[in-house]
Image 1 (cartoon, rainbow, N blue to C red):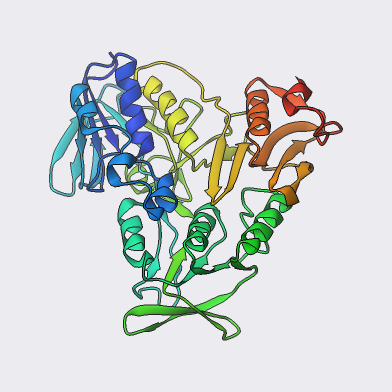
Image 2 (image 1 turned 45 degrees about the vertical axis):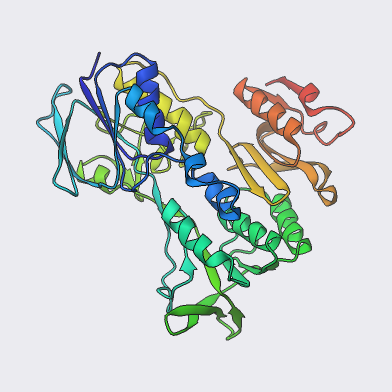
Length: 417
């Protein structure tokens, strides 16, 4: 094998997938995952939905049982942070060593970085009040749950996926909910104006107040606890909980220390998941990668799909194989009874076609660039989503002139590009 001892920094979905793939591909050397949290690898998407609602517990979030790792000889070190990494020299065969926050030294011949990301903070007066919360990990979710039953007024700052998922859960639980979004529409980075407007109306139909172009001045409180959010015009919106969801920042600090190429905190990799130092691979939320469907652009993909598929490529590269990353990006967001599914990347689209009636809460928005299909948003319409996901994977397209015809199944409209 190419490596005798592989170290994986990061115990999230991406780090776990690298380890599992290495074993599946026959790697027999030492294999160690190091994570900062006190838990082994677990699912994050349910934190804003099933876990918050009490429909999932910590054990059900585990990606694999503890015995799974033991049986496969995968050492999982929790509650330790890798603080320093160095190689003995410039050769591809040089060994390296990582030093953790406890002083532990971990020697390796292969290195994978999967550090993930951290929530972007909102630097406003009062940001340290109790009840001003973020939601990225299990500790965040537990803090939110501890306040959930006694909270009546919930303010969500940021109209992205996590914010809207929490807002939907809060309304279902009978709470008064206000969403404050700085942009002029919801989920603006990810979806079209048609999809944004649908979700604004849908959340308002369910009783949530959505404020667009909202300007915040400070958090207000009583003692050390938040009691409201003050807007720039002086209005104060009552809040027992403020959930801030304004995006995440890639954690590329270790990569920078290693001298790897990093852009805006994101670790730059090639289509083989190799960093600028080909001895090191990286995958997951912290990575800037070539668009997996081509086109010459670089993208960051914050999704379970990317964490899984790109990590398989990273594992292959550690074993000396050359497998290109060509998976179709896909995402989902469950907001109460609304299931948003996205396939492809809509960046750079010049045309949209709405298929179905948004008022029925079942429809699709297809994205085109120069007449070619590049992505789809679907709400409660899994067949349309799957049709486009398969088409993109096969390099096929749909004629925008026929896409809106709901009398015909979308999969029958797929044609060769």
